Image (cartoon, rainbow, N blue to C red; front, side, top):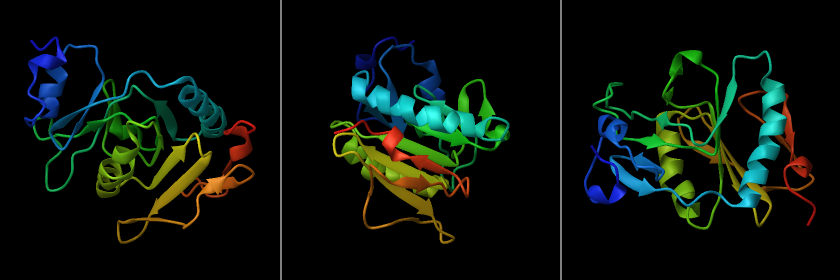
Length: 199
């Protein structure tokens, strides 16, 4: 039984079946079979931003098929041409927030497959991964909408999945004072004045 992260070879490749056997407390993500340490507990501002977003998303979803989840929450992304079987899954991530509209994707362990909407809040230690590896993973897996929030700059980048299966975003980020529409829920917007505190 693996009870300490140091028992693993961080250069080796693992599967979700391996991931289920680990019993250490440190949070990790498994990206294309490789272990990625998650940053220490998110800082206070990160937590506040997540809570402010949750306060707008959760009431809107009341009575709708979509449900919002927040980390720690396992999202398994079996990527083509792999089949959806535990021994083939080699990517398990924990988005800061995600909305899952298809209840068939949910079980006691988390979400099997791509959430419709993913939100990541940048930390200095995760920003490169969120803009590169996770961007590619979410795009490839079929996430419909990907939001990346920069807490210190108080900006939000929004990417939508096109018919060609690629993420597309507008050139400038959203800022305080903007209302941000959701592709997943047409006609609904998030008020960034309620997300970002006064400067």
